[in-house]
Amino acid sequence: MQRFEAYLEANLPTVETFHPHYNKALSAMLLAGGKRLRPMLLLSVVEAYEPLLFEGALAPALALEFLHTYSLIHDDLPAMDNAPLRRGFETLHITYDKATAILIGDALNTEAFYRIAKAPLRDDIRIKLVELLARDGGTYGMILGQSIDIHFENTPLNLEQIKILHTNKTAKLIATSLLMGAVIVGLEKSKQEELYRFGIDLGLLFQIQDDIIDETHSDEEAGKTTGNDGDKNSFVNLIGLEKSIEEAEKLAKNLEQQFTHFDKVLQDGLKDIVQKYLYRHR
Image (cartoon, rainbow, N blue to C red; front, side):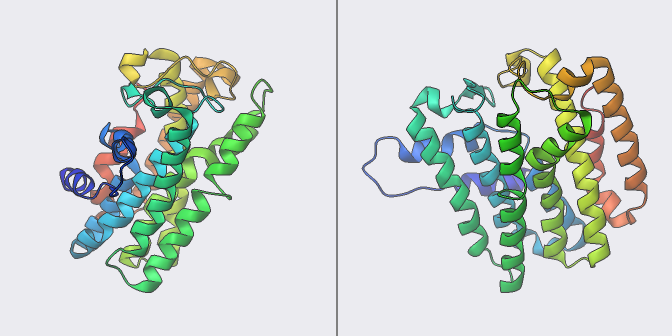
């Protein structure tokens, strides 16, 4: 991911302004690090099938990271999770104020679509990428999931409802990262759908692992505020730590099975990421 990190650092959003900390705030959470899972998934699909399109795919990969980072900034706000720590650093509303955090999140959200619109790709590809990111990162995905999460705090959901919550809040953006890569390289529809289904399950596994980490790791180990899910509909709160680990193992085995149905090109392209995240909870 060195190429992506170099691209990110060279393409941070900056504006000529007399505002004392606008540009610094725009870049803070992007430069704080993170797993870069979503851009990594998109770029791995592109690198596997069409390495010559890698440079053109960097802009939509960065757009994914912008959108994801905006969601974290807003997720940490006092009205949401009220978290003081993210990626090992103070959250923006702590460093600056709530208004700055809201506005910087808004800016990164819209900047994501601006970067796709300016990407060196065909017009039809850019329009499709905007559609997918807006769908799964917005009304029909991440925002719906977050709304369910906030509304049902202190109201236990059943296991199926929790899966719906986290499919929307977390899994769809992970799935659409793979799908956007497939669209860029022009994979046939059936392969796109297969990748998207795989991404949904990978996203659910990622969320269960996150719930396990929240229960078993300190703030310093996790790089973010942990032990903050007491009132939330997490897998651990619903079915307990042991059952959550069993659920993660079951999902991981299912993902391994799905992975064997991919062609060798895709398996080679994704194997490092898949192996890294399949058993992250161990």
